[in-house]
Length: 93
Image 1 (cartoon, one colour):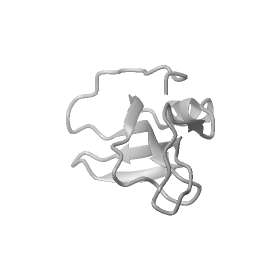
Image 2 (cartoon, helix red, strand yellow; image 1 turned 60 degrees about the vertical axis):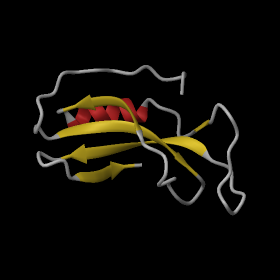
Image 3 (cartoon, one colour; image 1 turned 45 degrees about the vertical axis):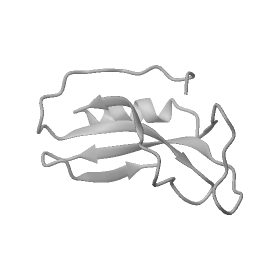
Image 4 (cartoon, helix red, strand yellow; image 1 turned 120 degrees about the vertical axis):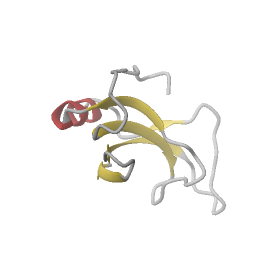
């Protein structure tokens, strides 16, 4: 994940915002055991989507991993809306 720059902004607790994250995935499912890594958080949806669009569709893990069915895992970005109560909604993957 060293290929991406992390962007930090101060967002008050409880403020709805958009998080651009990367998570381990295979070609057909997210790795539910992997905690997503936030690359950017902003209250501006357009800014989040522009940043997301600048990222590669996927990139290799530092150390190769596979799921139980032998499918290769990689990192893939997504955009999530985090509501005032912490509820998360996937916006784009």
